[in-house]
Length: 232
Image (cartoon, rainbow, N blue to C red):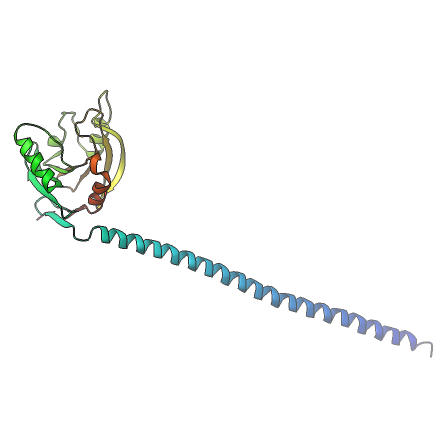
């Protein structure tokens, strides 16, 4: 009889330990399930936030594109197949092709129709009134290098023409013009008419695009439509 009592106590102890273990496993299992569900909820919320942000960005982009398109609605397009470029301009503007100097292949100038007529007439009398938007096309770098500085490349041109006591270009930076890498710079202090200069080459000719400060925002819109096209 004395030998059976420890066995009963052992059974009770075993049952107690088993109960504790089973309870612990149940709590761990429940905690894992709730933790997994909470993680999924947080992940879904995060994905929802990213989706909302992406949708907001897309909406802003579409809105901006639509605004830009509406602003350019009704604009005309100038295309030059011989020298390979095109750009859009306001419908109340006019463009004129000129050969100002022997060094230039072509100059395309744009302005409001009434202002363009006035400027053209004044220039015939020997004056030099700047146009609002001007594209000068040069046959070669030798002709582009008007100061005879021995320039061979566009990068060298920008470097040499932006130094010295009275530089032609100020604060030049690399800039994409249409679909080509080029440069942007401010006109030098003593450059008549001022404005911003955009310089690039399409492999056949060198381009100097001048946007005057009087119509800077409009010129930016015009410049945003500038493209180099195949030469025919």
